[in-house]
Length: 185
Image (cartoon, rainbow, N blue to C red; front, top):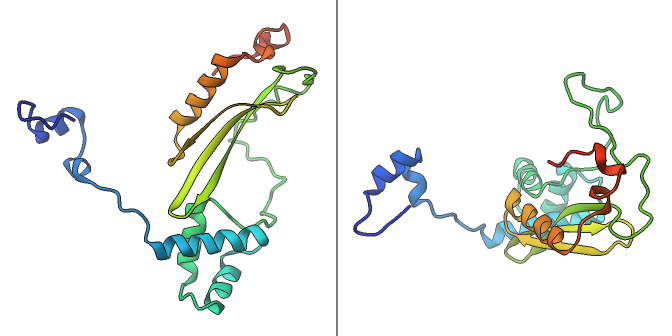
């Protein structure tokens, strides 16, 4: 969007791009300090007791003097991507409509550096929110080849970390006969 005097009006630009004009003026509101404090406490409780669900966490928070209901705790836990560790229903039954992905490393062992790479994403708690960390790891040496931080859990920062890793080295699986049956994404 161009906001200069000689540019097309914002209404026209929005129509050409198929955007709502309201989205042009939207300013995200950061979470309140109260919400951040409650989320930090929920994270602390969950880290200490990963089997606690929203009911138990609500009871503990109310005993600590935090006036909060279960729906709000559920929403915060959902926002944070945490859930109690409990057995789910019918875990051993396979859903027929879901595709089964083969384990591509079944007959391959990481016997040297750069034989197999993997990646992992986690979040880092801050005073005013969270950051997401992606790391590209060498499975043999457990060396962090590259990493990236972002405040949103979206694809570009993951691809940036992978591109930086590929600029440093290339996993041998792509260069060997073993990797000939793999297709790159």
